[in-house]
Length: 330
Image (cartoon, rainbow, N blue to C red):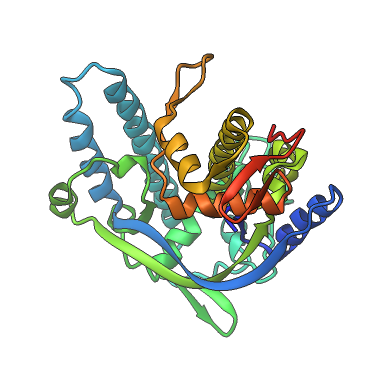
């Protein structure tokens, strides 16, 4: 049915919670789980390579003074600071430890605890310099190590033997490979420039599942749709499907409203006449000046009319339709 829409959730519990919230408003939905593929794109290179790449990209903006250039300069500056901090933290971690040293009970490497806990975070802090006497780090080492340990692990510098973790000092900090998400840092950068600095594009494709919740046609015309932001609050809903639902329902109800206005004016009309009216009519909003122009197939308009008929918004016999007294899409 034309007025049905589908929201995608990444958690069955969230999909069920959304269904429950709608049931409380008298709306029943259809839910199904679908196996799917999920891709995640990252860029991989050495810390130094990324730093040199960003520096060159940043220098290319020096001649520009517009807002976009200013935005990217700020982004590049923040990225450079993050890379420098990461390299500094890795260097300090490696300098304080020997090759093949066991780090299973190391407070600074505690994120490797098999229970998912960080041991040693209650170690007494040295009052003379504010550092943890065992780790050699300031007492904020926990978040720092959450960045360092995954990088070392990704570079094969953490070895597990008989359930214990050992450090393998096979690389210097600036030689380590890291992965960065495909985000604004690389937006607009050329493949040639990335290749120049040895930056590889890695696309991780994983199997997964999603929960599809299909709303019935009456949802589009209910007060529940007006509350959709509240109904999905706190739930892990796919943003694209969410925006698609809101846009589609808004446009379809706009068409339905114009159908009613036309039928109230003409009393009766065929689906072909209604389709022509929608195509010729410009939908304007006086408040914003926005205008919508619809170029819909006759078959699509016919489907809209059948949905509206089932919802008792209009009446019809054969291919002739008329407005039901008191009909309103708002």
